[in-house]
Image (tube, rainbow, N blue to C red):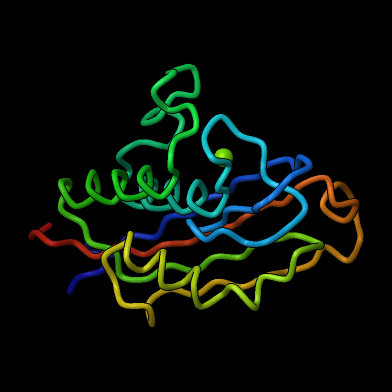
Length: 165
Ligand code: MG
């Protein structure tokens, strides 16, 4: 395959914590005393990955595809948003090769939920679980993440062309 048939995308998202769990990340309900505030379910992993997928194919972004002033997106299941983005990318002639995600948060620990999150994301992306990695990073008590005000997510995705380019 020529390099014109490979694309890289990045995504970033952050959400504020509010009292009352559970925390939903990658569609997985994580027992925690806080949840993420958002117009949708606040799933920052799904949001960052949605932007990475759309960005790699240069076919839009999450804000354009799911405007937060659209009431139909209120309380939306963000994994469905990710699936819709993957479908848009498929329709544009791309398939997901792999995804890599970093969750930056002081708490909770991500490691115990890693494999469930990987499996959930792999299903939505249409790839095997071995093509998806998730890791947690603390922010060493620095700044708003360190104070536990919320969390941030970084995501990277590669796509391969399904058509001649
Ligand atoms: Mg978001």
